Image 1 (spheres, rainbow, N blue to C red):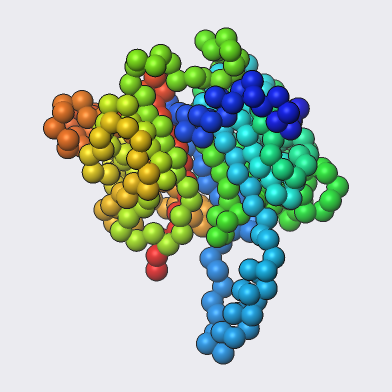
Image 2: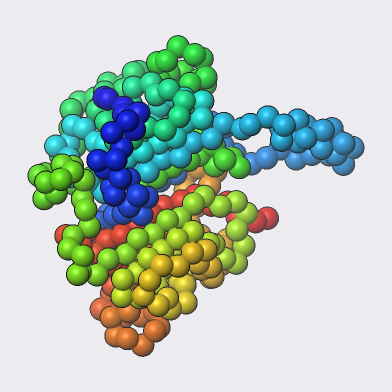
Amino acid sequence: MTPNDGSDRDSRTDRSLTADDRRRFLAGAGGTLGALALGTGFGAAPAVADGDDDEKEEDEEKEDDEASPFATVEFSNQYSDGEEIVVDSTVLSDGGYVAIHDATLFEGAVADSVIGVSEYLEPGAHYDVEVTLFDVPGREFDRHALEEPALLVPMPHRETDDDETYDFVDSGGEEDGPYTEDGLPTVDAGAVIVGDSDDSDHPGHYDGGDDEEAFALVDFRNQSEIDDEAVVRDVTLSDGGFVALHDARLLSGKPFESVVGVSEYLDPGHHQSVEVEVDDADEIAEVDLPARPLVPIPYRDTDDDETYGFVDSHGEKDGPYTKAGVSTIDAGLVTIED
């Protein structure tokens, strides 16, 4: 497991710039998603009595004076031998690790979903962080490699006990918990395909195919207390189309029922802060965790009517942007407004 401090970043600048958006998912949206939150450091804020308002304001002022720990992580779709994956980039304000979770995280298997972890990373930015799978302190495995395609979730973790050893599993979540923002952990998601890569310039990295073919890019961040809409931070659609939001029902093979919102028609090109109306936030599928996952997937307008027809046509029209059997995807966590 070898982190890179970015000293030779120029040789892979193009890769790092596009990695944020080239997150992919198995075509047909019937695969497995594992983007979700850990219970440690993640939950509802405690209620505050009216008489405690002044104390709360003082605490908030103190917190504002101190820089809060933060992290970012970017993980692209990639080919792998099943034993090792590469995290495109991560920034850790206080140092720590990038843990790799599999889809069982969605079932509440907080510790048992960790199937890989980087070595200790110093504070700052790191690029092309190699992570060996099925080698985690505190866990035993009956296999040493992935055997089939999988959606994996990288999650930056802090170093809370200053021993430069990942203790989250061994401590039952008491030590080395995840970096969070507004109570939601920083995550990314990407598909790992077991096999040889066709990308000779960046072995292990899926480059999205030929430039002349249709492609889409999407970036979605965690959001708190959504009501009637969620915001997709960035989306690029080569041929125009839509961004649909799926909930966790996508995991159980329900690509139509899982659609909980869709954008208006988007012209070809790049769009920022795309507002997606949510049909009913309370109906977004819950999982065995304190937040609900949403999965944005860009869709094409295959019949040129500027109306999203994927659900009504049962997939015959306006299918997702795909390449090599993989469709563009991102994932994020949301809480619902009371």
